[in-house]
Amino acid sequence: MKTTLLLILLGLAKFASSEYTILNGKHLIVGVQDAELHLNVERNISGHITKIDGVAFRTLVDFANRYNFTYSILQVNDTRLEKQSKALPGLAYYLQNGECDLIIGSLVMTPDRYALMDFAEGYAYSSVVILIPMPESSDNGAAIVLPFQFSVWIGLLIVIPLTAVAICFSIEPVNRMTQTDENVTIDQPVVSNKIGRFVLTTRFAFSQMMRILLNQGAYFPRMRTAAYFVVGSWCLGALIVVCSYNSLLISYILGSSAAEPLVDSPLELARNSNVQLIVDKGRGAELILLSAKIGLYKQLGDKLRSQSKSNCATRQECIDLVKSGSYAYINTKLVAINFIDEDYIATGKCNLALAHQTESIPGSFAWALPKRSPYTRLFTKGFMELHEAGRFEFWTRVYQKKYTNATYCLNEAHKRREQRNLSKSKTKITLNNFSGAFYVLALGYFISFVCFVRENICFRLNRYNQRQKKNNVRRKALTPKATDNHPPERGHKLAPKIFAFRFVLSEHKERVLT
Image (cartoon, rainbow, N blue to C red; front, side):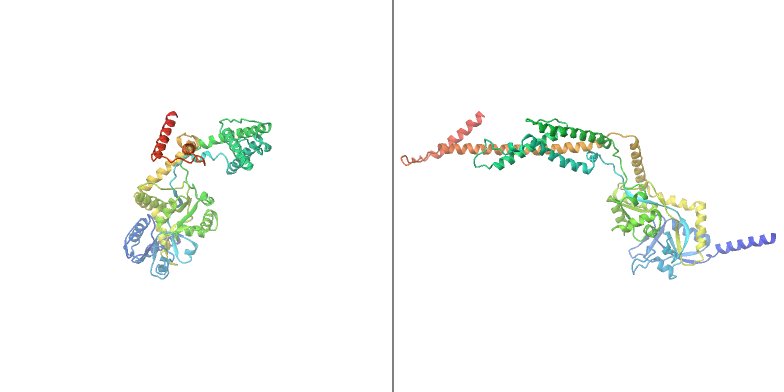
């Protein structure tokens, strides 16, 4: 029994030693796929790789020292696994043709990729985050129209003129409106007088109705029994409308004006039709969402397929779309943090933030090897040992220290989120809460100024017309009329000047008297 157990232990030891020495003295050709923090690749103008750094590269160096193998970098200008064009056939092409032994980075495992290559699982674990515009605090200008729905406002716009017409007919019966006025001349048609009376009375009724609606009181000089009924009904209706509006307006005025995020979770993003989803073209996030069959990722994939603009080819394009205010970008946390850091460096302010809730990625990131590669199991075990020793987490923290700008922006977004949560229980009244009233006041000032200018222009035009009429009458009075018995005398050559002097003198006397 002891002999059998000893043989088993010796066999396991031999198997373990042979597995660990399978890479001893080997040389691997390594392909690299760029990934934020995990693998930062620098290339020259021709696309030749000049420098590599990141967590994945440190892991490769550690494995090379542990398992005693050497490596060289595959010098191609391809940055994706899948084919992009004839000139860029994809890293998977080199892997299948035996030109590459290993592809490092943070690769996403999908069913389509499993059919072409093997994966050494367990390299890294992450969660899906949503990159959104930085929440901005806004004023409460819209609170003035929020208490009523759009249909209520439309109803008021229809009821007010109809009620004004009803009051008009109650004050001025039809038989009175058809009567001619004593001041109407013979050549003026009766129809125009009737229409003018109707317009004036309706305008008067409309202005008094608005005064009632604004709690300013009203005045109706001539009242009939029917007018009492119509005006009383309007007063009762206006009282109900004003009380309802004021009671609802308080809740909107006291409502929080704190910063509201575009979306706060992946589930909200999937259900909100007003927010568009954007991902990197041909990258892991797009592949995961489009290949998902059930659950939240299936909903996000359906949303992605239903949009006309669903992916971005460059990093800057993704950032610009998110900053536009209607797009949310989905990717791993490290990629999103890198976006925030780069945008802060470029603009000098925090324009981007992360949604509060995240979603874990199914499975893990991996490295890719050829189908049925003897090294797959060894690399998987190596990843487990690195995580157990804490070395992978240590390297990650070292590289995350350079994202100080992103940390500042994330802290700023956290403060605004806490402020919003606090405002739900305790409301602090500021001028932003009453901005709608100031907008209405500014509009009233503008309308008053326009009316003031209009009245001045009309007054000056009327005074000018009256002066012209008086001058014409005086000219006619001073001009002698010619008859058959008394022909007009030939005026003196100074007559025009004397007449002009008299006209100016009369104008001066008139101004002195007025």
